Length: 104
Image (cartoon, rainbow, N blue to C red; front, side, top):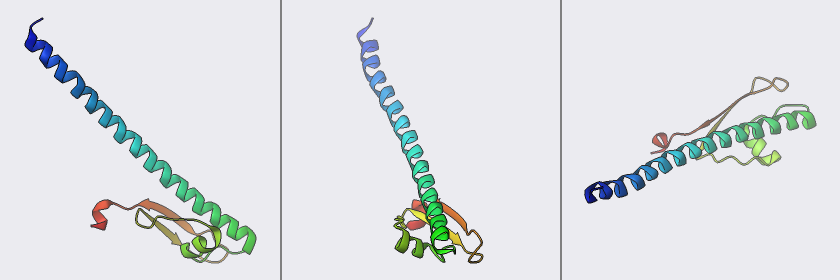
């Protein structure tokens, strides 16, 4: 094999591995983001149900859930939309990740 072919192979193989590693890292990060979002939504829903079971009414706001049921929400990262229809009607709960573009 000629030396220039060996030189190209020595350069191309590590670059290919680096690209594959970057792609895999991005996919793992996206999967973790989705899991965090699901966990937060489940935690909020459980706190809402716990409040209803112990107090007989659904919580009036997200702040109430945070203050009385120990839920910690990263408001810089997530938006929690909580729509109350009445004391005895399950609120509409939506948790979304904020875009970095919206913040700046």
